[in-house]
Length: 362
Image 1: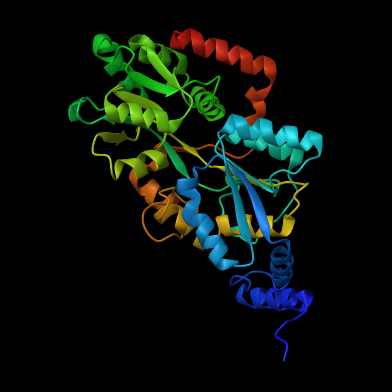
Image 2 (image 1 turned 90 degrees about the horizontal axis):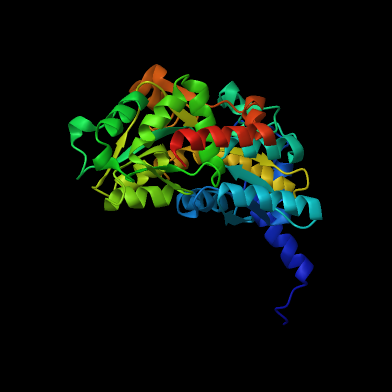
């Protein structure tokens, strides 16, 4: 007796099996099964992201376990590369990412205004209103921006607890801190530029503070990883405008790295995500976005990837409630709205960079 079967029958059997395994999450609309079925038929989702694959790995694994018929093609790049690549691919009409997930909130929203499809996630009611723009762009995380320092070389009593204290520390010990203070090069890092602009909006004395911080001469970098490495090694002593999620993850295994949360104000970044209008796997993209925003996905981010959740129903302290208990009114979430686009106008951006470089001595 023959053991061969038509390929179409095998494919249909596999498809039905996968659909049966991947049921809609509790509380989702009754017609969500059709989205799952269509996504399973698509077979994959292509994600363009600035989130390090090491941090995103548990999320990818959790998604693929929940939807076993769908693979995640995860592309990890810096914010400037992501922006330029996505625009170029859209212009050429070639294949591109189905989902964009960027820590550079301003350029992420700029892409969303031009290329995002409207999608009302079933998770919408669980999200802060400031984190959703026109049901197109979604904030996905709640990440304080912190100071880092070398614990071996900076006494506990000298650790600054505000931006003014940081400036005072460095201005009073310029020899010690000469070329030992690190932050983003705002011309090379989209994230660094966005955070600097938000600093200027939060602090009317920002450029004076920056000038005092720069009295020791700034060592600017384009990535968080490089800054943490240099502070840990002692090549630099202190850094500012660092993503707290990455710093907290590293500090767990790096006894040299200290973290300080400024008490005057602590910017909070939320990585912006959207589904492309031209997504080739649009149903799988919806599943991915919903999973990232869900209690399950947010729990993975908070408790396995050390990326704080923007929900308030996550087990543990690494969500909005936990951070609010620690920092209270000092927390300043950056809203996902049109205000992010102001300094992306070419002349305004160029003028701002010139002003920053003057204050930073660059």
